[in-house]
Length: 367
Image 1: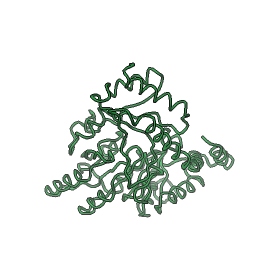
Image 2: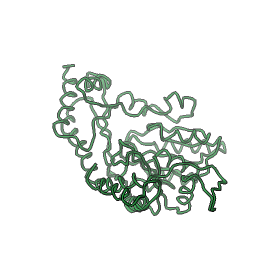
Image 3: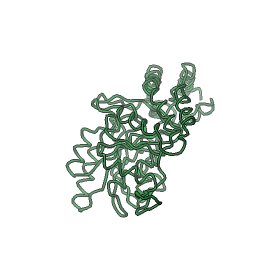
Image 4: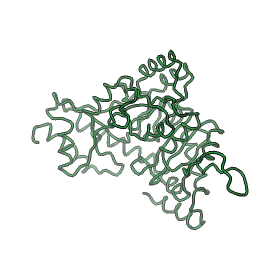
């Protein structure tokens, strides 16, 4: 937290705008819209809520198919199940670790032949890197299938000079506590379509009809962000560029310190984009490195340094084990060999050195 967040929260208390809605919510929506370059935004309680509303706004119903990146957190796909729809998972490409546009095209082609195109494609911008939207957008446009861009991890990133969150019919951000900026809990839904965002606001406030009494014609949700949390978000937004700079410096430090190690590779960064480097991720080839990813993780843990495997593919999760998947080998290999290193915006040079020392010690056979 910086100084500005506390000042803005104090404003909320002094004005007595504490409950959902208020001037900070309106301002936060406007500021995110301007940053992303998208005309309309709705501040919500979480990124998961934003995905859920995006699916509802695109007409997803029970029995529909929704395609989704498989290398991601479960929150990307859980809302598909909320609506009784069926997730269909698409594997990653090697170049960005994001959704493979060729596999997406093949699966859409097969779905079209069956007369069962998906209602939407949820494309995840993994670890702060945008997917290859030049190809993915072309593929989806051929079949008339809308994109929901899950940019939960990618605020401040860009692709071909367009900001993350601006590539889908609807874009999603998360301000959860582990994201590059936070409101402690919160999210945002953005779109160029004003009617979609207006409907999202209606649904997120319990779908109350215009009436002097409480009148409800459709199911609603308690998904609106509070004015207090929006104040925190506004303060955090002012720190975004410094946070992105810090995360990118972490990545470049690790590369400088570890790139000579055989069998250790970093998540590739595409030359078509600018990445916020939310997390720095590596892969370990045991045959070349001399130890497994898990041995490295446990050595870091022994030194009181937290690291985590990359996302376990959703098609390999018990919850989604019956779902269709196109490909799968790439994301499975990334999970088996991939590790996310400490990447916080407040990491010191000393802390970064400690991480690298442990990894190098394992490589040299000391553990």
